[in-house]
Image (cartoon, rainbow, N blue to C red; front, side, top):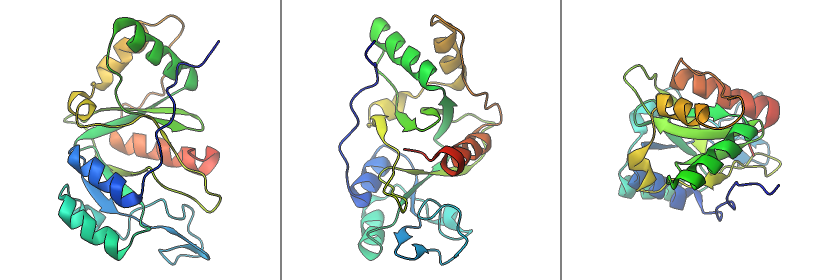
Length: 208
């Protein structure tokens, strides 16, 4: 049976990606990047080279101003693209099997798919933030580790689908409406839990 996952999006530069995410209303900050000796943060024991925000005050730098972002990436063109979670959107990890079910459901019902990111341990489905969401962060494509691996968009975010993100409850209903047992990773804790799950995927399975 052929996979229902779409073809992966073409690679873009960090600046192009940052400007695009900001134009969709997602707050963006510059992140660390991979160097010949490890991570630009300078920590020789860094567990996530090139895959984390810079410093502890990174939330003060998030912006959707594309002109500001252009200046920042001119200064650090290799910086990874960090986006804040819990303010505009949350991320819910689901299994590869449930990701397939979602695509079949969307296709069968004529529902425009929402942003979906590939992951080694499953896929990440983007949902709208809710009042109990906790602020967090994640690194979005393009991002490379020392081996050149990177997460990829299965359904890229656009200005259209960014405005109609489902709630976590809607995502659960979609999965409940599909044949077979739902295998969604429960993330009742919101963005903080989602961020922990994403970071766990990077450390244990490496997002790709």
